[in-house]
Image (cartoon, rainbow, N blue to C red):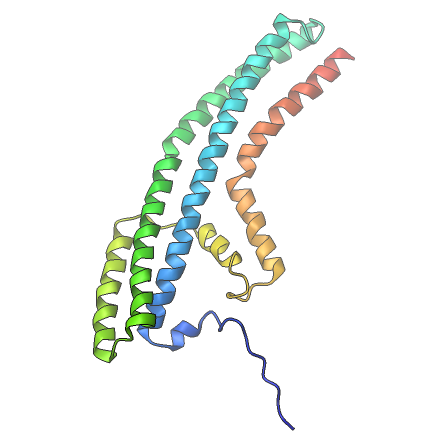
Length: 220
């Protein structure tokens, strides 16, 4: 009786640890370039959401001032106090938030990660060419590994490290290779949203919600 063997599309993702240094270097380059690209994308997303949040907060501040001018709330004393309090609160929030976001330099950091990823990608391409096209002997493999490994380390020393969530997102987008379940992928994406987007979405959604509720309550 013959045993049926299942052929996997991908090898176990830790197989590189049981193979040559060339295979391990290949994995490091592939995962690093992918993760750094994800880091760049995350920072650009944060930069975009940050600009939108600041723009919306500025608009809400202007709208609060217009409420009293056009007496949208009926001109009651409570409404005037709420408008004054809301304007002051939003002004302080906008000032503090703008300064903190400006200090983050999202765009510059994103460009650095993009530059790092491109340099690592160039080394990765060299390695792939040597592995698949040139077919070097053992002596050449040692030389290639030493040269490319040094180039890789030099690049890493010149750039800051990415965040752990960037690597998690990279893994989630290669779920089959890393043998991740759908639940693990969902948790990673949920964590990414909480860490990267939730604050900005809250700043965009919560102020107008509070304003509308306050207007309804003071008008009844």
